[in-house]
Amino acid sequence: MYEKLYPNDEILHRHPFIHSEVQYNLIHLISSDEHSKCFKSKENNLIFAQSSGNNTWVGFIKV
Image (cartoon, rainbow, N blue to C red):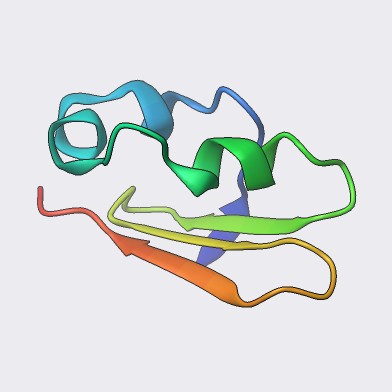
C-alpha cells in the first residue's frame, strides 16, 4: 500500500535513504513541486516520484 510523499517527509531524512542517496538527489526537488505525483510505501522502503511531463523516479531503500 502507498501513501502521499510530502516535501521533507521523514523517509527522506532517515539513515537508509541518506546513506544511499547521491549528492544532488532529484527526489527532493520533485517532492517539493506541488504538481508532482509522489508516493511512498507504508513500510518506508520505496519512493515513487514524478514531475509533470517527465520520467518517473523509483527509489528502493534497503532497510
